[in-house]
Amino acid sequence: MHNLPLAYPGMRIGLFGGSFDPAHAGHLHVAETALKRLRLDRVWWLVSPQNPLKRQSSPFEQRFKSAQKAAHGSKMIVTDIERRLRCGFTYETLRELKRLYPGVHFFLVMGADNLVNFRRWKNWREVAAAVPVVIVSRPGAGARERLDAPKDWIFLNARHHSQSSTALRRRKRAAVAKPARK
Image (cartoon, rainbow, N blue to C red; front, side):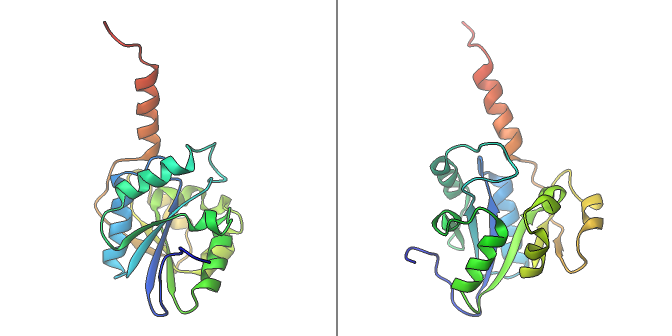
């Protein structure tokens, strides 16, 4: 398959998946924290074709461009690999990446706010067993979710970044709904 990100045996790659609807500085904070603290070679931002646990997302191209704007630095790679590989679920993505990139050490990176829904992911046990799972602290998520997490997961405490896609979408809807003043 052509136009896939480059990775070589022995490399350490963080897989940072999401809708990125829209991508923002909080996403970059999670990716950078994992990159630095785990000494990763790269972080691949996997823009999801459609998160099965969320309502219809904005158009893929819009979300992809949003991620490209947010992901700064040569070690941040924004990719449409899930769409190219026709993977609708994380377990499928991990299977394919491990097949396509033998010898690459993958880490699944997520913000702690995603822990609340992790057990709703399709084949979540397979995901948890496939690669090391890295959780970066986020506002409003933490102790309760952490108690339920497997003991071998990697938790990275870092300063919190308050931006969230949900809040950004809510503000945008409010701005559109507000009538213009004369």
